Image (cartoon, rainbow, N blue to C red; front, side, top):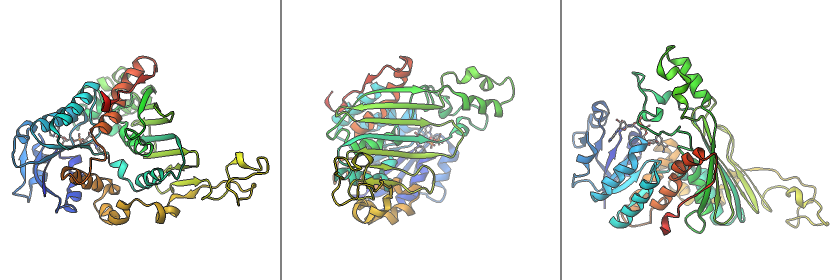
Length: 412
Ligand SMILES: NC(=O)c1ccc[n+]([C@@H]2O[C@H](COP(=O)([O-])OP(=O)(O)OC[C@H]3O[C@@H](n4cnc5c(N)ncnc54)[C@H](O)[C@@H]3O)[C@@H](O)[C@H]2O)c1
């Protein structure tokens, strides 16, 4: 079966054009939807058969469409997903899936009611090292997992304004935004970690809190680009924003996750900073472009952990000298053994499709899920669990950091 796909939101959506070229046996692009004439013509130029819609509500009525990829501004995702599902279309949604807890519950109810495929396009779960760590965690290589970190650090201040200096949705032009006082973009950092820890597949996110910084870098930047007296050059304009948010999550099985989201501080970006700790080893991703991701695994990597130096004459694992200090080793040393099969078999195609390969595997798995070959690897329960950190974190901040429960969306 070739899935007839429509894309809503032609900017981020365009990143997938190249991906679709590599998956033409599985997916045929049949329509694009964007209110901007310019964006629509960028897609349709030279493609006379591609249908173009300016209204999402018109597009969902098209019987020639099986599935819709929603890549519109963040606050539209849940509403459009519900409209599409209720019109009988499968949905692939950009991140984050929902911005309120009501939207989270409505998505679960509607997917359960319609029986259609819903998947969230969290491409960071499909990065090469994220998939390899998942493979290792699934094989218990790190032992019992206790702690993980994720950070998404990306100075997006230039994306807050249109050319006419009105605010974009990222600047809060349409209400709450990714930089509202809370953690407005948790899924790139949380998604891979949740998969490593088996969240919604044995463990569960139980409670969370978030602390946020003041909005200092954002204010300084606005003062430097706006004329004196402009409303957005006033500090008051940024009072409801934050530069950096730190979220803590406790899982039902006693694990802790620490997330950072920063979309305003001036520095080289790092959008996939992760660590993982288990009872038998640890993982640490590269801190900057080009730095190797590292692991230390008890009994595999060089050395023993300090607590085992000469303890009652014993060193673990046996055969290692007590005096050997533990040394990180490059993750890639272990790729023959632990590279994820997707990357072994399809890595080249994925890389050619751009954006580090993640977008290719998102679309590849969505097609497999729609045809019933697999369950969606990032299903509606994962999508709303991970996304719910946004509305809950806003409430945490309002309540001065009081920890709050995370709903169990699978057992409502
Ligand atoms: N996963 C990733 O790596 C990644 C990367 C970039 C963006 N995103 C996400 O993708 C989404 C879009 O981001 P972007 O950078 O393209 O934003 P953008 O503001 O640059 O573009 C949004 C596009 O959606 C169109 N649009 C607005 N309202 C619409 C509607 N009702 N129906 C259809 N189209 C509509 C706009 O005209 C515009 O072309 C966001 O949610 C963002 O968070 C994800």
